[in-house]
Length: 282
Image (cartoon, rainbow, N blue to C red; front, top):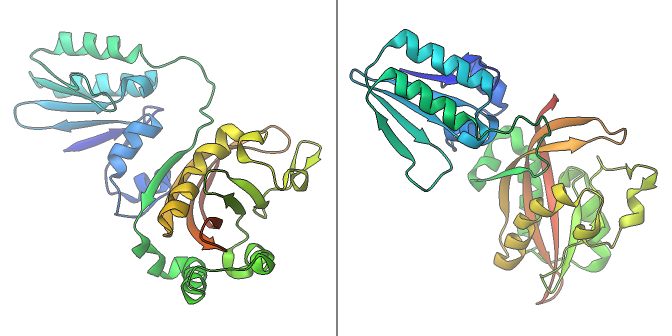
């Protein structure tokens, strides 16, 4: 039996509707348990006839999660424990043969989790199979993909605005990648309006590294560079902390289809077709 313990100490069971709803993702093409442990502060407790295995990431192991894990193993009473530290390459497995030492070791490792309430600004990005765009829920992505194929990946500079503003492309953004080593804003996603008192239009033509929210934007452009260099589309799942114009923050989970468009042998534009999956207040 496997129990999943959330960052607030709540218990979930793998494969249940409740777990999928919390994660905000219902696909079967990624390991959601590992994802939750690595990125969301979950722990997994699996009980076997002769031992209990506990998977967690010391750097993301909140106190409430630890408390529920301890209560679970104290109640279960198994004599042997296997601790699997996710996200570490050095000695990730430990075998402990008594309960007291296991409790002490878990408490010691949990100390690696910061007590700071500051939320991470860098997004989590997971590559997905392009086969997913055949799902009816992604009809918009499929339409954009079909247009891209029909045009054989080529576009003229006169048609750039048509793509960036076209309904089929979901109001996503577009960047220009001259020489494929820079990433310049060509068109903003429709969800972007301003940076404080400055309109986003003021930043048209700017490199993403010079934007006010570059800590979020720059990591998300890695997929653009990959698509530009490979001249192949990409489908990604992104979870990110987004800051509103008034300074408030929220979690956003969305998929995006990245399409590279060529105007010359060395000149590429890249468009992004988004699909919002979840928005959650912090």
